[in-house]
Image 1 (tube, rainbow, N blue to C red):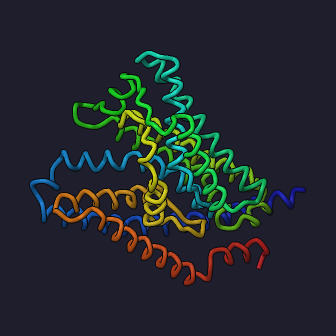
Image 2: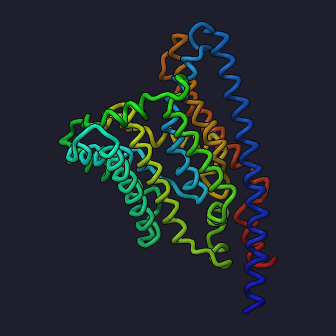
Image 3: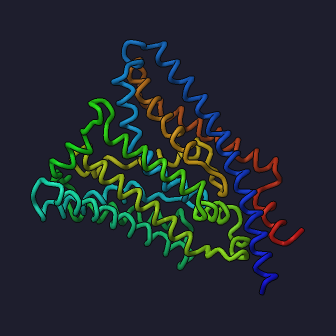
Length: 353
């Protein structure tokens, strides 16, 4: 029994050293994307200094990215496990719908009503994440299909509940304090909340056993089982985290827009996935960093804002983001090929060769 324990600890230490290398790799790509983002900002500032290069415009870009950054936290964990979550946009809508319905039923504009609505949104989001995780682990349905299905179900139920009409029942306390509130008269509360959650996500991913296990599961699920990691349970928890962040984003969206935005989240999942991958998280699993995700999410926001400012059709944003996404995946594939494949690396270590 003692020998087995020592072996498990040795393998886990190896996993930790390899995961540290993976973190460094994704962080390097994150810094490369940061350089690209900086170049974009400089370019648009030079082209339109009086409109793009202003503090008010910078805050507008931050506001547009804040909610996506919250979604990006959960999505980063999911993609590191070699999964995908297409349902986050629909879960965001569903969470905001049930939250708004409950707050409307409770009545009032105070924080007591708002806190009930927030709790409902978070529970709804986590519940959808649990459903996704169980479908994937218990029914062995591929994540792409499982979350594609729940994406349709969540959005469909939202439309059934609301009869296809947006709900605008948002307590004034929530919209005034979170949606439009500012700290020191300058910094939007929404941005502060997003930043705090991003920091928590970074700590969770890079400084805890949960994060270590996330990298291990994405790199080699079978090897992870051999060292005692409960892979299925961990995958369920990761998808619950993704659902929870979608629930939080639902609250933030409700506070900011003061409506449930039934038709406003159709491409949210794709934008978040693009940002996560551009930021250095590998679609093949095992590599990722939330820092890179946040930087990657800023690129579409800066492009859209910049194109509008200089008079270029905003539709070109999707063209540029698509090109950058393909390049990011191609670079990731080349790095993996150069390393002989990360899965092979872990397979060799697990087998002792």
